[in-house]
View (cartoon, rainbow, N blue to C red):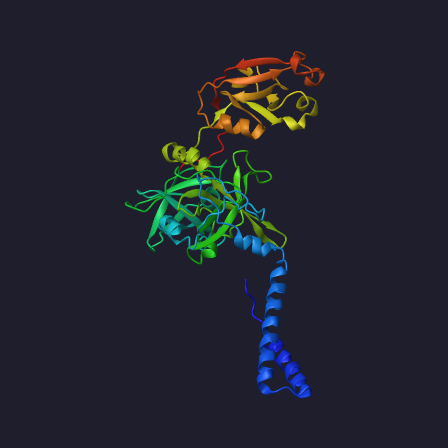
Length: 423
């Protein structure tokens, strides 16, 4: 690349030559000839010197700027260029500018919900004491079926649903499930916008999510965040509450509202927020869509959820180091109730359930969830490892000392369903 000679260098050269001419006594034509020859020589030398200079090494910014764009999915993989930088093939070539389209698919189906209960004051027999709650809900059927959280309506006898267009309807509770904190109410309206419960893919950590609800009663509000974790449990909560943890802002009034993905698919129902001493810290919890699809149809049809039951207590294999050193995965039985489905097929404490219906089991929670997904009366096949010495599994010297058993109990109904009866 040719470089221009700086103007100030030419001026200096001309000054030197003029000074030399004055001292040499040369004529003006002779001076012009001398100046032209000197300038040509200087310019030639300058260009040669510039061409011989090695260009500086590329900086990180230069390398990134020169990196070719990522390839679309399914195309030929990108190879590193001479910079040694391999483009990130998972990065989209076009970014999402707005989530408006996805939000508008669901927003008309998200409602505000108000519940209260009134009793006569025992002293005056006239004044009323009113307790109440305020939250959100999601229409899941065009004929006025609304999904919300049980903690918003439990024990309260006046429920009002306000649609996104401002219409207000009284609602009745048609069923609930305390284990998952879900309730279904119905309003006398038809042809309503609604969202499907089973059209969304499973959430992954890092997925973008949007929460729609009525926080503090200010009106329908949308907040945005990502999935921080999946299958979270709140301390003291039910084993069936395997929440999605999100960092989208969740406030009082968001409970029962929709959690959607950017495509306008329902991926959860917001239910709780963790608050530290200084308030909310960006930790919210949502009931995932796969659990909704399992539970809500039963609530709508029967008013409650009937879960399969074995009658066992279980713990993770990691709680038993002696077992964990011999068995790759499973859930350890720590107790068996008398006259339960488990006792009738001979399941014992310290048996290790390694699979149910051929599906490997890795934790106690996974086993209980797998059992609960099957309705009562369903036979299930359990794969079990047992030590012939029934006193202690720790006496087995290696995996070869364990018996491999197969049992097929018929699931029963839990003595306490843990649900609220319809009113």
